[in-house]
Length: 415
Image 1: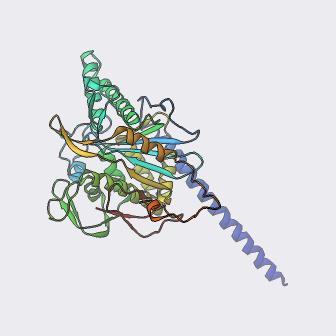
Image 2: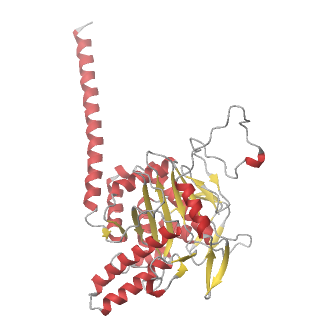
Image 3: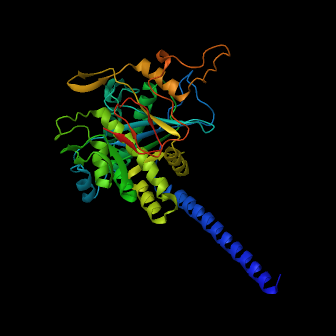
């Protein structure tokens, strides 16, 4: 081989080594940047002193599992009680700070099993009529979404009457509200533990959607609603941040005669949006996009609250699992709709719900059929819900029933 050929090969090896080193440095630098920024952002996020519920006696909890309660508030103020910028009110069709209370219109219990099993997210319909854990303000029963607001009002009044400053009373009352809501949810679900919580305001939702827009969604039919600002065509489509707010808030149709939506459809919309958002975060490589990361971190500091032990890197990991399809979404059943004290409520069977939640969080091992038995199930034994495939299809799945389990991993079509 000629000296020239040796030089060419040597130079080529050098070039490959330089490229490899550059790529490695870029990857390590990116990871380090994200980690440092996430760690630094923790200093500005509201870390709450709210008390997290532990598992009730006899309730299973595996070492290493995580249980996260997502609480979405309908309040029109930030975590300090201050109004949003006017452009947010205009975009989300939410009037102003004087409208809305402190209801948890979104309650989602996310269970991440130890050892990397399939995660499950359980949505709790907001109007479920339940027993309150601490009887806030002397009220023992009511809509589950109102536990937060009732506890906030009672504690805030108590502290202000005792001479506590307005700002300090506000923050302590918010912690009391979070504690009451979490304890009520834990009790309602059968004494389940809550290891962490994420509290999200309407502005946080809007800002996150704004940072990653457009987002893909899919609807089973065209629908419009003057209250939420919804106006959607049938089928797959991409929506911006303002439309995303309408998408997850719509619970009625004011234009099409053959479209009948309920609050349970809104719950399903929330699940569908989280699945689509997780896919967007993954596909847009958000965690390596410094500009988008900064937008998300700035949003978290002003419009999100978490418990003191919550790690933002864990939240990023959870989002990636949802994007990969390693999760299902369930909605708790409602026995019937009723009216109590002039309020429309969901009548539920608490014991049946606790049993269902226990089975979802800690399913029994699949039984192996005997060698002599027929391994093919009869039609009577066939489950109404087929087992999800190992690798979800990238195409949209269609969901028409709010009780049907939803699988993450592809953009779902919903009502």
